[in-house]
Length: 207
Image 1 (tube, rainbow, N blue to C red):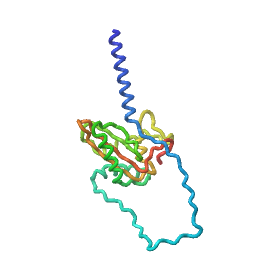
Image 2: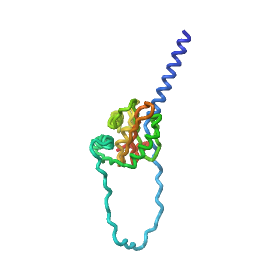
Image 3: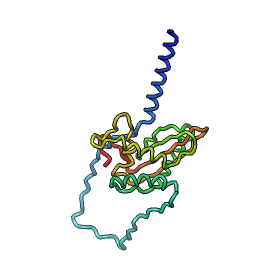
Image 4: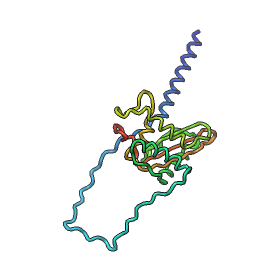
């Protein structure tokens, strides 16, 4: 009997450790707001300086048209549908962020580990076993976290997660870039989205 009891205790302890590790690896990603550095004082000239000649022609930046059904649209459209319901401005696809996301997905191709890149951008991660996870499913898994988000307390209710959702609806975020990678040796699919400017600043509401 003593041996059976000891074995049970070891099993319970091992399962508890695994649950703690699982929760830690799936933790949301938050960051402290960096301190505001005052701009240096630059005295203005007493008289206005003459404008350069000829006057430069302003050309507004163009946003590339993303074809329907493209990978970029599969990531972008559900983000913007969610933001539209909340009256927030839509995100635009950014090639620089997509390249960054691709770089990080390639770093995780051997282990599919849900490790954050801790770079200058906001970041949502997804992992699924197998090899057939579509971008839209990953995004929807983040959207459903909205049911756990309590706006009044700016926190997740109960044991639910909501940090992926709050990053998606962060008011100041303008640009999005994502990537998906099937990992080596059947480790699953790693999906990452990056956001600029980042969100999820500690103590601040998303909108």
